[in-house]
Image (cartoon, rainbow, N blue to C red; front, side, top):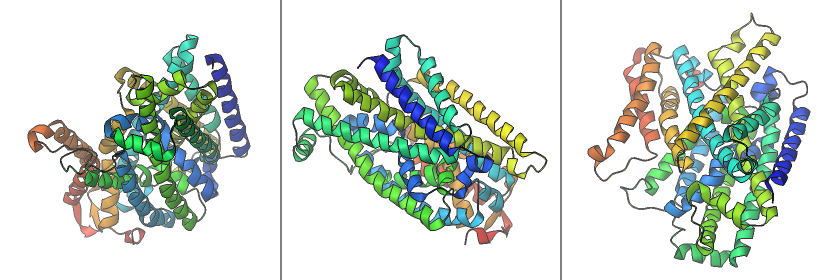
Amino acid sequence: MTPVLLLGFVLAYFALLLGVAWWTSRRADNNSFFIGDRNSHWLLVAFGMIGTSLSGVTFISVPGAVGSTAFSYFQIVLGQFIGYAVIAYVLLPLYYRLQLTSIYDYLGQRLGPRAYRTGAGFFILSRTLGATARLYLVVKVLQDAILAQMGLPFWFTALAILLMILLYTFKGGVKTIVWTDTLQTAAMLTGLLVCVAFLLHSLGLTLGQSLTALDAAGLSQVFVDDPFSRSFWGKQVLAGMFIAIAMTGMDQEMMQKNISVKRLADSQKNVMLLATIMLGVVALFLFLGGLLHLFAAQAGITARGDALFGAVVLQHLPAWVQLVFVIALISALFPSADGAITALTSSTCIDLLGMQRRSDWSEARKQQVRKAVHLGFAALFMLLVMGFKWLDDPSMVGLILKIAGYTYGPLLGLFAFGILTRQAVHDRWVPLVALAAPLICWWLDSQQKRLFGGYELGLELLLLNGALTFAGLWLLRQAKHSSPQEFVR
C-alpha cells in the first residue's frame, strides 16, 4: 500500500475521533474535563483503560523483546494482577470516601501541603517522561512507515500527531477520552488479532504447532528461576505488583477515569475486569512476538527489538494487513498520549495552581488558564519527543520501566506512609526525602556490580525507592499523631 493511501486512511480515522469528541464535549465545563462529571459508565472505562495501560510500547516493544527475554514479561503481568486487587479494595475506597478530584489531595489532608505538592510534582514528572517516551516510539514507526517516504521530517510527524490529540481533547477532557479510548482500544485489539491470525496462516501452523515451534526455538519460557538474574520470577512478580499499585493506583491519569465512575462498586468492577483482561491480552502480545521471530527467521529478516514488528508487517505482509497494523498502532498511541496530556493539565491546575480553591477566579478565567496549561504540555511533549529521538534507545519498554522505578518510588513511599501509619510528619522536609530516595537508588544502580557482585538490581528499584522514601518519612515523624485518621480506616 502506498504511503499516500495509508495517510488517507489515518486521516479518515482521525476524523472519526473528532466526531466522537464533538459529540461528547457538548456543554462540557471544567468538571467534565477533570472527572467526566462523575458519570462515566464503568464498562466503558474498563475497556478504554486497556488501551491506556498497554500503549504503543506494549504494541511494539513487548513482541520485539521476546527474542531476548522469551515470555518472561508475563511474570510482571501476574504481579500486576495482585496490584490491581490492592487498588480496587484499598485505594479506591479511600479515594471515593474523600470525594477526590485529584488523588494527591489525600497526601495534603494526611501529611500536609508540601507532601501534596510533592506527590503531584512527581506524578507530573513521571507521566511526562513516560508518555513522551511512548509517543516517540509510535511516531518513529509512523515516520518510517509513511511520512519519511513522502519526504516529510520527523519533527513534522510528531507535531501533526500532537495537534491531532489536542484537537479532540482540548474541550471535553475525561468526558471525551472515556469514549475515544474505548474506540481506540477496540481498533488496537482488532489489529492484534488480525496480525496473529495472518502470521499463523503465513507460517502454515496451527495453534498447537506454533506453541511447539516456539518451545523448540527457546522463545516460550515464562518463569526464570535464577535468583541473581534481573528476570527472576520472585523479583518480577513483586515488581509487577508494585508497578501496578504505583503506575495505576497512584497515577492521576489512570485514577481520574476510575473516579469518574459514579459508584465505588462499579469502579472496583472496572479495575478487576481490567486486571483479568490484561492477562489474556499481554499473553497474546507475547505469542505474537514469538510468531514474529519465527517469521523473521524463515524470511531472513534481520530487524530485532522495537523494529521487528514494523519490518515484518510493512515489508512482507499484504496491503490490507499493513492498513490494519497502522490503524492499530495509532490506536495504541492515542490512549496513552491523550490521557497523559489531560491528566497533566488537571494535576497542574488543581494541585499546583489550586484552581478549585480560587474563589476569586471566574469560570471563564479558570477555563482560560486550563487551556493555556494544556497547550503548554503539548509544547513540552514536542520537545521531549525530539529528545528521545536523539537518545534513540533500542528498547523503549525497558527504558520506561526504569524511569518509572525512579519517579514513581516516592509516590509509593508517600501513600504507603499515609495509609499504613498514623504518624504526622514535619511537612517542610518531605520534598527533600522524596528527592533523596531516587538519587540513592541511582547511585546503587550505577555501583551494583561493585556492591552486589553477581546479583543484578532490576525492577525492584521501584520497591527500594518507595522503602527509602517511607524510611525517610519515618525519621521525620512528629511525636503527635496525625488528626485525619478517619481517611485511612
